[in-house]
Image: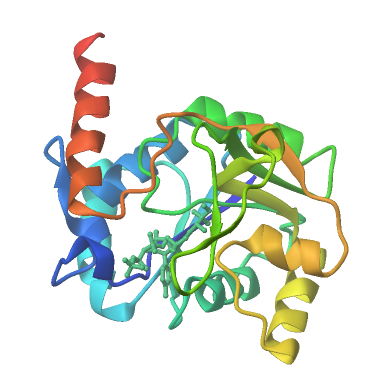
Length: 229
Ligand SMILES: Nc1ccn([C@@H]2O[C@H](COP(=O)(O)OP(=O)(O)OP(=O)(O)O)[C@@H](O)[C@H]2O)c(=O)n1
Ligand SMILES: C[C@](O)(CO)[C@H](O)COP(=O)(O)O
């Protein structure tokens, strides 16, 4: 299975002056934890890291330190996650028929989750890891007034990995460019094009490290995970 890792962000919400994936959690860069999970997944055979050229030297050093045994390609990122993923799709090896897309910022995903998504994409055209929402969600207008309360039992929080048929997802990204669609995950493009997306049970600990508070939570989860071993 081919894996694309969007890792070309700027970490605005983290307040970092550099790519937040270079920040350390439990003495390793965030991106290193994501790569270690990909290395440990017996389903992942190829890794594409979508990143900005100014980070390539740092990423090359991290990759060398991890001594990964799987092929790793650095792919130029874009100005949005959506554009970065499209660049990644266009840079896949010609033999890639399915792909998993997994945020570099989701460094706590386990090899088991990667494996389950890789196995599930062989039986559908599109999927996402997701977990049921625990909070009651409100739709709120620009004045801060609640407009509606969706039925919680139908609400899931999308995570990554997200998996897709490569040919179809390329078409959906092309449609997205043509129509000016701006989406925050790739499943939304699939949905807009009328394709079904299957839910795969995600992990409560599959946090997207976005804010400084998330760094502390990620450190706690990793310490709990590894100190127990
Ligand atoms: N132009 C971009 C923007 C984001 N990402 C990646 O998409 C994932 C999810 O994005 P997010 O958590 O929002 O990262 P940032 O965009 O860096 O964060 P912020 O929005 O706070 O700037 C991250 O692994 C990030 O590196 C990317 O590859 N290319
Ligand atoms: C793809 C994603 O992780 C699913 O929850 C999320 O949409 C990424 O959002 P971001 O603003 O690019 O971090």
